[in-house]
Image (cartoon, rainbow, N blue to C red; front, side, top):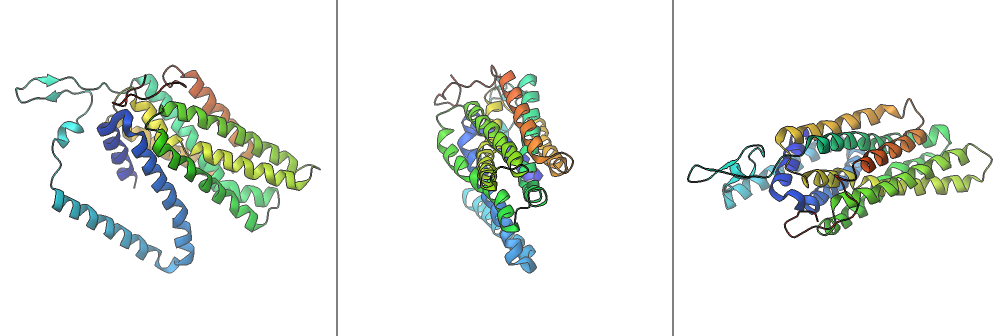
Length: 299
C-alpha cells in the first residue's frame, strides 16, 4: 500500500505538475470513502473480510491487465517520469531543459507540515472514542459519532476541491483549512472545559461535535493540496516522494500513541498552533492569494 501510494503521487505530480490538484483531490476522496467503508465490512462480514479484500484486488488486477492489453504500452513514459534533476535526451542527442526540483526550504516545510498534520488527524480519529467515553462518560453510541463525524465531514471538502483546485492555488486552500482547524481545536478544548465543569452538558456536546466537524473539514485538504503546493515550485523526485510518504506514515504512528499520553484537547490545540506557525512562516513560498494559469503555474 505504501509503495502504491508513493508511486501514485510521484506519477501524478510529474505528469500534471501544479495542475495535479484536482486529480489528487479525487484520489484523496476515494481513499476517504474506502476508509469509511472498510470498518463496516469488517463488522458485517468479519469472517469473509479477507475474501472481500482478495476479490477487490483481483478485480483491480484484471482491470489493469485489460487496460494494458487494449491500449498498449504508454508512449514516452521514460521521458515523463525521468528524474527532474536530469535533462531529457532528444533525437539529436542534446539535452532539453526540464523543470527544477523542489527547493530544500519548501521540501523541509512540506515534510514537517505533513508530519504534524497527520499527528492531528490521526489523534482525533483514533482517540476520539476513548477520549469521550473515559473522560466525559459519553455513551458508546454518542462516542462512535466522533470518528464517524470526523471522516464524514472530510468528504464534502474533498469533493469540492476537485473543482476548486482547477482555479485556486492549492496553498490558498491550505490557508483556509487552517482556519477551520484552529476554530475546531478551540471548540473541542472549550467542550472539554464545559463537560468537566458545572455548565449545561448540552453545550459541551454541541461544542464537541462542532469542533469535530470543523477539524474534519480542515484536515481533509492537507494531503493532496500540500503536495500540489510543493509541486508549484518544481517536481518531486522519487526520493522526495518517498520522503513525503515516510513523513505521513511517521505522523500517523505518532498520532496513534500521543493522545494516550497527553490530553486530546491539548494535543489538537497544540497541533493547530504549530501548523499555523509553519504555514505562516513560509507564506512567501505558499501564498494566500493567487490563481492558476492554464498551464498550472501560479500567478
